[in-house]
Length: 267
Image 1 (cartoon, helix red, strand yellow):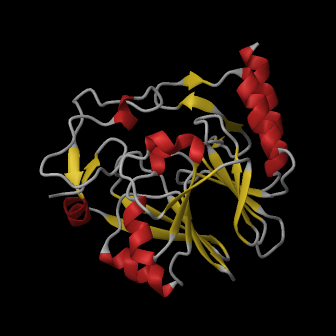
Image 2 (cartoon, one colour):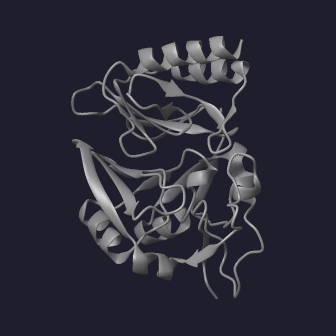
């Protein structure tokens, strides 16, 4: 029996003698099935050909990303706080080196994920570190591998540790979540939005999409809702889902201005 991972999105499926017949995550219009068809890999085979690379962005915040690129190629973040560490978003590769490094950094107390495209092997990360996974209940149907470590939360906000708050922004998915970190060393605060809010090249704009790979926009009414849900929060920096996606100052102004322009262009 093997845990199989979808090569296109990184989602893991329950152990089985053969790969699944299809991947519902990829068949949804917010992702895609490759023209060559769905393909699968085991966790062990992934670890044989890939490694994880780390980068520190500021005191208490590190990112981890798999090399060479695998699946969607998002990065995850390890947020270190006095009350314990948070893994924000997730990547599929959890090898022995990563386990040792994370344990050395204090482990993981809580895992939170922006949306289903990044669920990957969250179950393995939770088991390795004894962590609870916090997912918004509106996205419950997209969990392909159920696990008792998953906590489905309802409502609009959830403080998972002091100064670390999940905000249901919506947009890309009904339960689309961003993380607000109030406890940055300089007191400015930071927003970690996955790609619920996508940092654009140049780091002076962000965007909001229904489907990024299929280039399908969100309606204006939903953009207004996303912007309104984020407006009350104070933060300086934004750390996006992919390498180089960082807004280093004026985060709220950039989000508000970008949302207004997006709505204007939709007419």
